[in-house]
Length: 496
Image 1 (cartoon, rainbow, N blue to C red):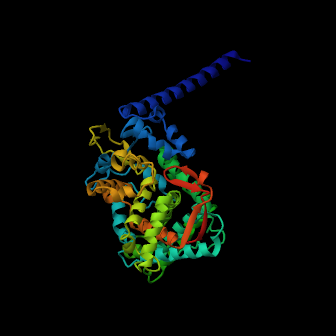
Image 2: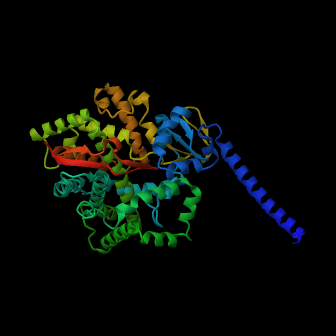
Image 3: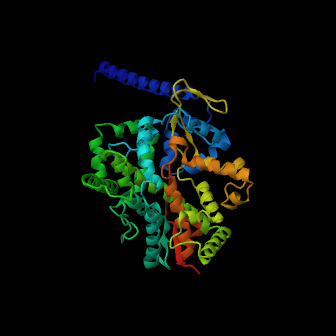
């Protein structure tokens, strides 16, 4: 053996290793130094590993909920990420006059090669699209949101009677079917039929969606992953992978539906796709918004449907009082076949239950990062952040603030909204509004979500009695940016 060659090769490898280690250490130091004044887990200050571990283990909600108690209102959760549960800071960042643009975090929620309102980071592009679609989301462009959602609630009730009475049913799956049929009904004028399908899964979408949500969370939170999957070279590979999944089959279906509408002489009326066409969206833009409706519309609403119903079923006081209010309204002839949102809003305890449900399990755990504008910014609490820092709400901690909601924040108690003095109730409701965003960033689907909650809760408890089968383990829960629940077994019988 030539020891000279061996020594030379060894020196080369040692040099390469030294350079690599030096680069990693330097990068870690620079990452830490930039936001060194923001407290948080040390690992989060030097790498994305802390966040990745929480995502892949499904523990973001319990971990993030405890952060403010340990570190304060501003917590560093990544080299460039800061979360806050401070309402005034969030109003400063997301308010009408804010100059904070969207952070690149949003780009991770693009499912295929085309962006949509939820993934554009250019504020002017976002605003232009939202101005064209908001009428559809609000039901102001000839769209019968009440009728579309109400018809799916009727289907839910009839399918429970046809297939699920007297035997345990996985309520987590049933509620996802309900949410998907509701959003496709308002989007396309006709539900895809998840509730009526024998296996409850059209295109295999239900089986694939939770894996997709974990992938989207990682793609959003990790800039290196986001850049890789969004690159032009990766686009064919992404399309190929999607084509063999339920996600791809669902996206292809929405493309066909949208293409047929654009090819027709009359785009139709009464649904959101028709409204989008009339307002001037291009075909590609309309396809993107259809994909957004499926992701953001169904998979956030279903969290609140599941969790609020679980809290109702496991809190006898709430269950009994809500059933009594519903029965009184029905007996007095105050509601139609499926309750309208106007009728529901006249039922104070139902409204308190809806608010408390959103508080206990917000639709999103954290996220919606904005970037500190050029020159940096001083927050309302006096802390200064350098330009480019990504800051977002810690939603689960925001809804657990004892100074806002009372010392019993971990208790499902709708009465907190009824018993509070007017000023305190207004404070709580304003804090709850932050879950839907503010100004231009407010959730476009807020009205649809609230309508769905009111109708589902009322009609299920009007017609049925619900009981958790395994109260010691009510469900299996996994959390990333959103909640994912499985095995929520419920026994359903006709209302007594």
